[in-house]
Length: 296
Image (cartoon, rainbow, N blue to C red; front, side, top):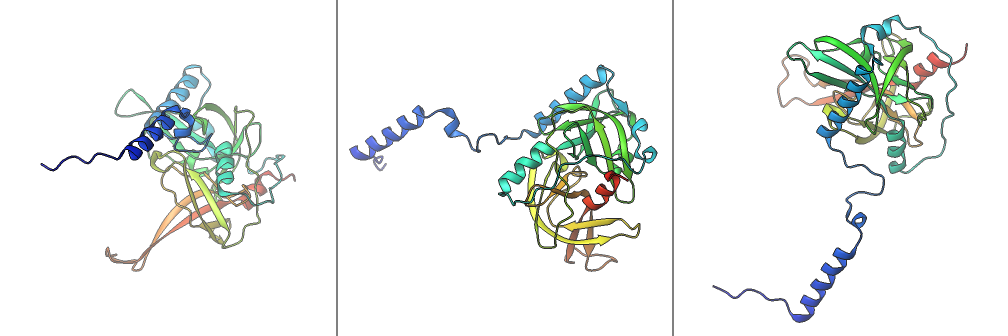
């Protein structure tokens, strides 16, 4: 058996000094992230949101999904919105604005298989400091889950839950709904219609309950769909559960929000695995949102 390697005396001294310094450093020096940046725990965060929503339900503060269906909402509400920012920011600062402005929309529900409460969550973002938030029309209108009971709530990036009291305005063609929540002291995201293809864009979302995923891409184009609403195509990544999350520009303004995805195949009929695929990421436009809120 070969002899074990023994470090030289100077080497041993250096190792001991490094160990002593590491033990003497404050615990914050051993963090993986910068100060203020959360380390996400997906399952624990989902449970925290569930418990917060259950507490609101037990206090009788939540309205049912049926009573907040956006089809019954008006098509206009005048709001005073913050002005758009015009100074580009580091991407880390855009992330911070996205976190502070996040205001997701969820459903607390009983399924048809058990007697436990569940949550189904989507995205959204504050547009005023007193708790008015934007999300997708389909977040409030559609549900793939069969529910015996369902109640709507809002929640922020910290996992705090708030009642949703009314749908202020909605546009189904543009996939936009504006809701009033009881959240206060929000950090609203300004709206901007000044995007240009090729500009960097960002999205903070929770695809498939993967909390706080921040992605970057570019604005690809604006287009008008057959229902005459203007949308964006962008290349930021998202997945199911991201609907309603803001698409931000480099200044921290919302250009719109996540609406849908659509996969294009090289062959539309009988596609084979080798076929080229492209996924179009479609976002509702701040232009349409501003038309819902502008004074008449």
